[in-house]
Image 1 (cartoon, helix red, strand yellow):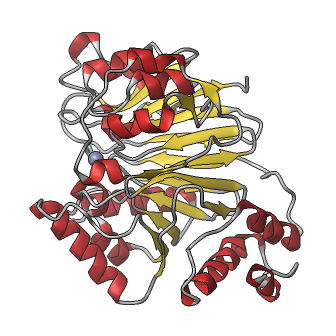
Image 2 (image 1 turned 180 degrees about the horizontal axis):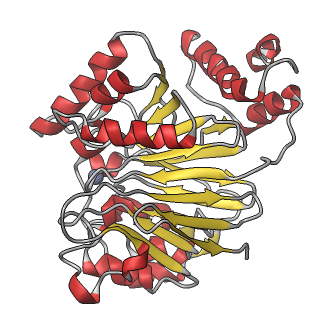
Length: 377
Ligand SMILES: [Zn+2]
């Protein structure tokens, strides 16, 4: 089997931080051969085993929720300094978002970003790519395939600027499909949605009937890039972390009804900046997150109806917000201690989660300098 022809790249002398590179070489081999870009879980296991690594990560995964003012940019850094960035924020003449990402990378002790996953081509997610690569070295880009929203000017511009970056051939490039698994030092990253397609079978931990489908209104099919978001479920030790980008309610219902294909989630990146086009009860109540983080800005996302849904989700310990939501006002914002940026001048504060294999979560607010603990359940 071709997968087993790679062990020379993955011997026990390969340092831990090179494991995902070994994985990428494997995937590139598939691509060159014209085969599907795919990494079956069993293969990740083979590579990890051949490296001599322990099966469980040793320490906490650091997750920076960078304030890109109503876009998304979330940086994951493993104990061994391997990194995954989900989305790059907006383009900006002064590289505001790229600078904020580079600052978070510096705080995390890394000088390059190994993998950049783009959920979709809207400008608040992909627009920052050219500025990012000008600021900090990047290894591989991961996306859902071609931009399908060819009628929206800013989306076309962002997608074309990204294609120009890829055309330099300085970067790896992966296009995974639902069900594919990527592995980065203890992070098992399962693709659950991509290009409008969804996993067909429940993941381990999912599979039960979803009682919340009955309480979720059916919405018409979204025709934009949002519905094509490349969404991932990340396992880290006992933790399960979900980021579906801006996946819309029609796709949530398809994914979660009548069977909950995801199961319980510990840490939820609230979809779509907390805007009411996403976050149906069929998703949020069924996954019952322990901690949720909303990457809203003052005037984007943070819809009161979504805020209500997340706040009332069964088992939720806390919702955190990147910004005070003006639309939410006094009744639909969390307490100030759990908001990174209050009303007033933009200060770009981030939230950081330390995620432990045991299930422990710690959330740090860069504005207040304080940390709240969430012991494992
Ligand atoms: Zn967005």
